[in-house]
Image (cartoon, rainbow, N blue to C red; front, side, top):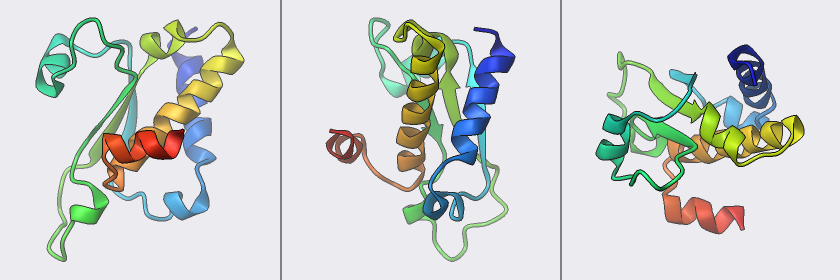
Amino acid sequence: MEKEKFEKLVEEALANLPKTFKKHLQNVAVIVEEYPSKETRSRTGTPSYATLLGLYHGVPFKHRGPYYGNAPPDVIVLYQRPIENLCFTDEEVKEKVKEVLLHEVGHYFGLSEKELRKIEK
């Protein structure tokens, strides 16, 4: 899939997040990268054989105190090729993008991987 088309899917997924989430998303950028870098895998402890679909970088919302401000944006990264590699159709890619974005937004709000896995089941 062309990167521009994939980015449109990400924009749509972001626009269609539940209103309760969207109204609290502040100072966060959502970007697309083709694959996670070796440095990213190393920093996150993700082995080369594992599939990394997305990543949240920042200070989770629930950990921000009254003096939080003037900070660089948090970043949510979606990794295009690993997402596509799990899917057979464009519609599956669209659904997986929504799923991964929502998962990373969960991290933005401070949910742990364990908590998110429990919710996703």
